Amino acid sequence: MRKAQAADVAAVRQLVLDAYQPWAEVIGRPPMPMEADYEVLVAEGRVHVRDAPDGIEGLIVLIPEDGVLLVDNVAVRPDRQGRGVGRSLLAFAEEEARRLGLPALRLITNVKMTPNIALYASLGYAETGRDELDGRFVVRMRKELAG
Image 1 (spheres, one colour):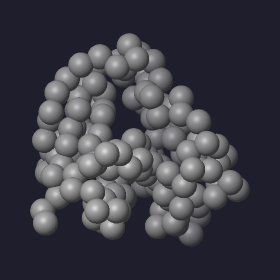
Image 2 (cartoon, helix red, strand yellow):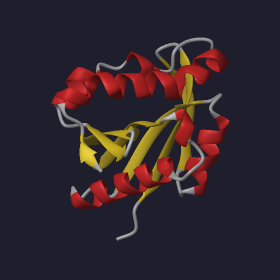
Image 3 (tube, helix red, strand yellow):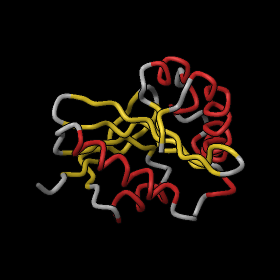
């Protein structure tokens, strides 16, 4: 894992578009990560990428907040999905939260992304609420880290 650099912005954008395009069709509009400003997020050091010999295979956007680390986006190249890349990115997020002294992680996902919700639940994230955010129906989840 490494922090994305300015030279990675185009590849980061493309990976996000490729990863989320099927969900845009399910949801009926682009998921929020498709509309994020990756130039700014990369410049702020929020985007972490996992490299493969043929380019970036996954990324995670992490934003420290008061008492929690926000997992703002997890994206895996479609040809690498189902191979544990997403799980490794989420494990990295836990390491980062611990390194930063934050006792929990939180994330938001669309209610229609049921496979993702199931993955998060299997990794110890608990649902904390459902509501509307920017015209999208979302599930809020949180994971407390053991001491």
